Amino acid sequence: MTKITTTALLLASVFCSAAHANSHNFTMTSPQIKANQTMPAEQVFSGFGCQGGNLSPELNWQNPPVGTKSFAVSVYDPAAPTGSGWWHWMVFNIPTDVTRLPSGITEAGHNLPHGAVQARNDFGLSAYGGACPPVGDAAHPYIFTVYALSVDKLPLDSNTPPAMVGYMINSNLLGKATFTSYYQR
Image 1 (tube, one colour):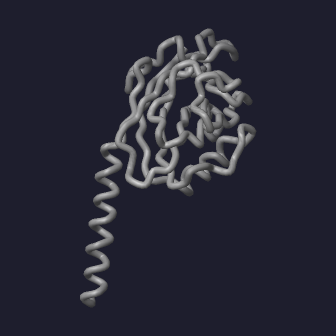
Image 2 (cartoon, helix red, strand yellow; image 1 turned 45 degrees about the vertical axis):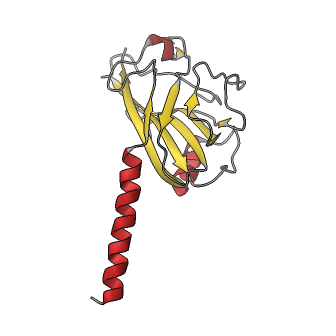
Image 3 (tube, helix red, strand yellow; image 1 turned 90 degrees about the vertical axis):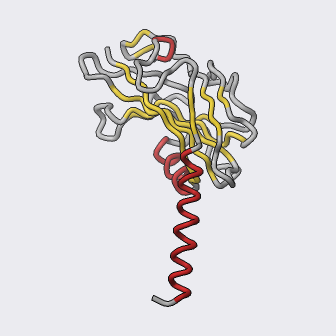
């Protein structure tokens, strides 16, 4: 190998290691929902046979990667019997000065940070839709994720389907923090 190639590989390795190390510090928590625990009834869907509060939880995050220009948040159930999982919540265009989503964000946007947008979930609502697995299934995992993005805004609106939001998130991703909660009935 030439000296230039060796130096380039070394610099790339250092850069990737620094970016990877920085993403380890990026964390998300919730006072209502504990990682690897059962989701409280307050965050369970109200409908489809489920009887919960359907209240979006408070989510807090810290230590985003350097260069973050906005955030997005999702809640996803990969075990839903659809062949593609179930998107329960997608929020994007969250400004970088916001490091918390309060509990009780409504479809009308009550408690939603200024400029943030809720995309359509798989219940057909531009809002939070709580856990609601089929009766008799094993506990489903509900993956809560905050994404640090390299752009100020995604050029999408509240009618955008979750797959398109996911595509745009992954196209602009700097890092993410996640935890999983479980629910069965």
